[in-house]
Image (tube, rainbow, N blue to C red; front, top):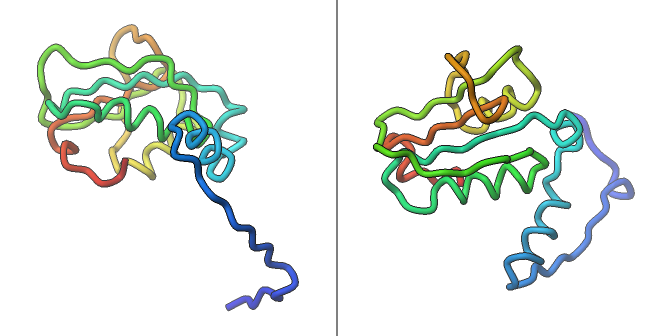
Length: 130
């Protein structure tokens, strides 16, 4: 194991605002992935879980880490299984989402609003990930 000298560790106290907009800005500075934001891959989230607000929650998390969420919508009908779909080639953003959501990526069939489409199914309705 590597020992880090205490002189190299910076500790800073942070008080987060109760205001949602200010809170999101403060949190995004702590967890922002600059490579993710520079890659600028568009992401659409479809909530097919029958659990209200789940798509917005995931969208806020992805936005706070630097992702480019272009659409959050509710599916017409619920789906049992969540999906992580992509157009074109695999990207850093896709790999990051795969490692966070633990959903195996699959190639999109047909046109889409975004480069990556996340469908939240009923299997994630009780998730504590986001």
